[in-house]
Picture (tube, rainbow, N blue to C red):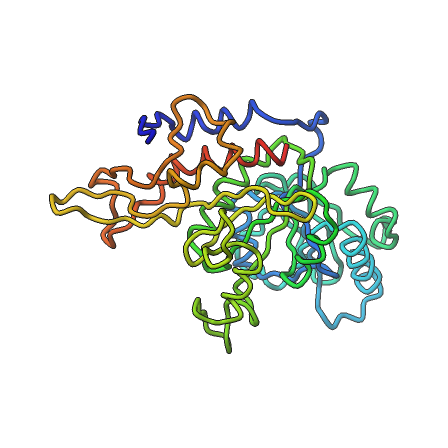
Length: 355
């Protein structure tokens, strides 16, 4: 068992991310964080926008007057952005101007009578374009003009939201892709992105698609609106997609956990990474250790991306002793301490298949 202590700090890890991988050369443009395979722009509220700005998301945000607006300028622009989302899979957020009220506007235009489009890089407003009666910018009326405006300012996203019902179709396409399964309410998932993925994305272009599939939906994890991991529909989904041990696939892990990342090639699951979700137990002498982990001595034989790790990176976590100061009051491994070990593993996975 490899038990060399990983001497990684978040600062060193961030530096490695910046130095490795493919880069976008035009410094005037930035990579959008998310795309989507939904059919229209996504409405958000002020609390959502605040979180996205704080997390450092790179995005396109439209402010507008009313969902029931009779203003022809918004009607035309609403149709335009929905077509661009459907055709190009950009994720465009829309928020009512009235949602800002007396809150921080972050520099956004909040006119009550006309829309505006905002380009946000790393949680900071980079550019905004207002619709005015004296400046009838064609991008508010024409799909081609809006596409061009986005292409001039942004690189395509690396991550795309995908409805779980569309996943099997992607598998049947037999193309290469990565899928990340998550829950909206999962703390480990939120630690995976934005904390890891936002920083990893910067200045990189993925060579294959990466899909984000939310399992916290009715018909999968939710049953009558309640989360239930014993729900047969949830178990069946995990089994069918080789996420849990019941699937008998060597990459299936225990009952199945999120976030799980999988790499598909030719319609076949080839490799996987599970972020966090280690079980911690205490010995009779009071010391703690990892009693169950995706990264066990047996399973790592099937994880091909481990070749990308650095010499001193730990890749077998099951059985590893955990200092008492890294254990939370609930008896779990503190996320910031577990991150030091899991981040290099996920980085190696993405370095192998995504870039």
